[in-house]
Length: 383
Image (cartoon, rainbow, N blue to C red):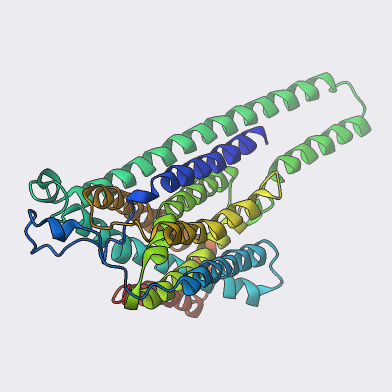
């Protein structure tokens, strides 16, 4: 119990710290898809790296966008969180799974289509120093790869830690039960039966640490899911602030399609994350809802920051391009790794429950994931 509380507090603190660090640096955030001069511009052209003119910026619409994104994010994550923790029947479970797998496709496409190309554009932009933009043009791929490798290392270290903790606790329990049985060997049959029942209840209480243990396997598997869920939320948090800023500073004809894309993205990404959080067990019942609340507010806060800085915002400066390119590439690495390793692999080929489903159900789940990826990729045409 103490270990679970400690890891919960650590990751919540880490998420808050990450958001604070990104928020403090928001004067260096851009919209990589639209920001900066084209790659055919001369790097020595001073006007090419200057701030772009603000065209038809509607303050009421941008204020409304804060609440639109807030409501959409809340609907996505809280609906799947509540339904997954309190399933009414198989139909509800089926619907949640469809939304979850659709959201997995959205997360995958976000990394490939929305994050990585933006990072590549920013880090190869002529406004960035030539040592980065021209002499080595693979920094976006490098940062994405490093993020994925570091994420894998973090998961491995955390899983090893949990494995040792569980082994140690099991040894202590076994020693305690053996000692108790030795002391009570002289007791009569009724007392021995009582000790056996007590030991059995102790084992059942250990299993009760996670109310879903009967559905998802061992405690070790459940802790792996806990770790991967926290890391997934970390990756989502990194890019959520950035896309919120993008909406806040957008003007003219790019605002509406960008807002639609973000609303779609937030809802279905929230479905996937909420379902993952709902599968976990927490010693404090407020923690899953605080995690969902964190996801709900982080993008609207980014929109609000964007609205506040839109007049002084220069999306073409070298600092802006570097910071956004690095953050986007890191987010892309995290999201792509999490989508393949901890969402697709875990929910499909490594999931006994999925493997036991009827062929038609498996087909529906796969189609849902492909549709999520396809629709999000299509939206990349406009935003």
